[in-house]
Length: 311
Image (tube, rainbow, N blue to C red; front, side, top):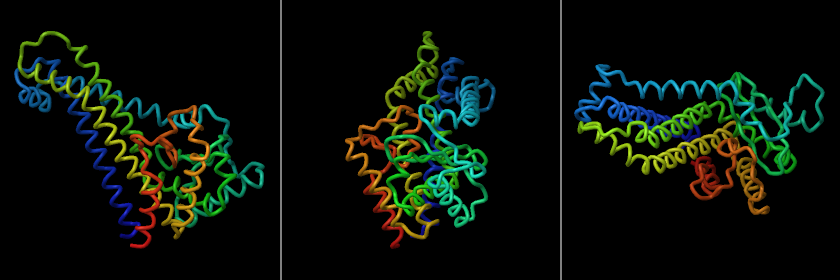
């Protein structure tokens, strides 16, 4: 299987997860609206709401809140992602140290080699652990951040592979996908958990009561579904970015060595380095959490890189 096919397959998976989220999101809103209008039956309530015989107020409120939160994230993502650490923007128009110039040169090489039409802002972040992340809604406001420890401990080709991995996240547009899913999942979990209290009246109609029972069940089932969907989405993203990095560099070995070194550095410190900004955890190239990790294991990522390269 070629890298183009790997990327296409993983893009299909991520879009499927997003579609699933949107369906569940709308379903939750419609259930609450069925309770709100005290529908005679579940099916008639859905029909009335979908046909706009009854305005689906809660569903549209959920969509409005989701859009507002996403817009807030778009306008404030740099501050949110970089808060809690000392960091420096590597601006080529200003005086830079040799190390900073060398790191920026790697990014420029990758931009040129991949025929990428934009250059994300590059940040170096003070941190005692080896990691990196990319963020941004689109190519015009995208960023890549590398920790100082990562830069100090990787060879040039390994560091280039990590930057290529983060650049691939931006090129594949999966950052906006993850952001959208995160907002959708949090809002639908919140509505599912509190909707019973919002409409706690004794509805006599069968449809409203059935909707309340489904919402009650979803309070326990939905968190599990959400975790599983987020794991599937994030793992597909990481495989896709790993493949993208190897594809841009025309070599899978630097990415493999970089993953091994990053993982080993966490193992040596017994995973003691905890980021004070939890919003970065899911964006990092390596997530040290083991249980229900949003990242595939290093072993599986390396197997994927080796298998796709040899295919």
